[in-house]
Length: 267
Image (cartoon, rainbow, N blue to C red; front, top):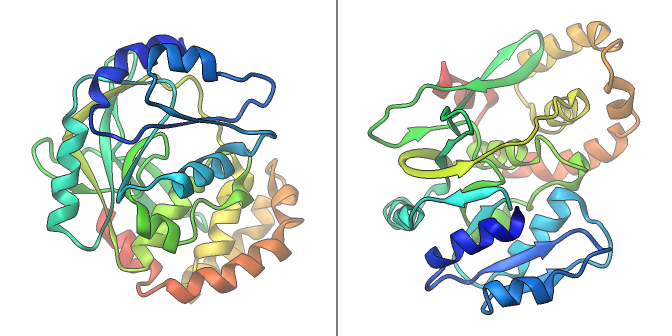
């Protein structure tokens, strides 16, 4: 399936620097990929890095101003993703552009919102303006375009979330709190047949402990801690608390906006 999608997508790669990251050390894909798309730069990891580590390695290897993170299960319909570059040129404070992603059942996903409930910052789907750019909580790490310099300056994807889930939410939230924007363009469409979704409570807790700074929200979170103890993943997050707090010290120094300022964008 992966090679089938590459065969479909390659006609839209003209003028792009294409880097393919292989995070499966037991399989070298160079020969197969080069037969389909000779110009692709291939990186075969010697050990599994997880989603965040693998993406970060690719972003650091890239030499262009913008990076399009594209999972192997994404199918390009056309080259409309290139129109995102105009948005970046017009908006110096734009960090990322998310796309309309068409699922197997024709449902369109990719727009999302944030809200505070039961002591946690949560997320859900958003029904965006179908004709114009809309602020979104996060740009998905598997199908979005990012300003590369900001991606690096903000600290890349955090490997605290390994193997995956919430790391792209975390990066976009850091961008929002540092004063940048994350927008959704309904006119850029791709097929992205998500195979599965993991609801990782452990990583949701890591996100709160690392990024939440409003004192009243922190207090509400702490008051809810007794309810969290019995949810799978709580103690897995708790044993990581020293590392989370260490990363938090560096993270919050970049913040210019409060949690409620960001959450109010989606109320």
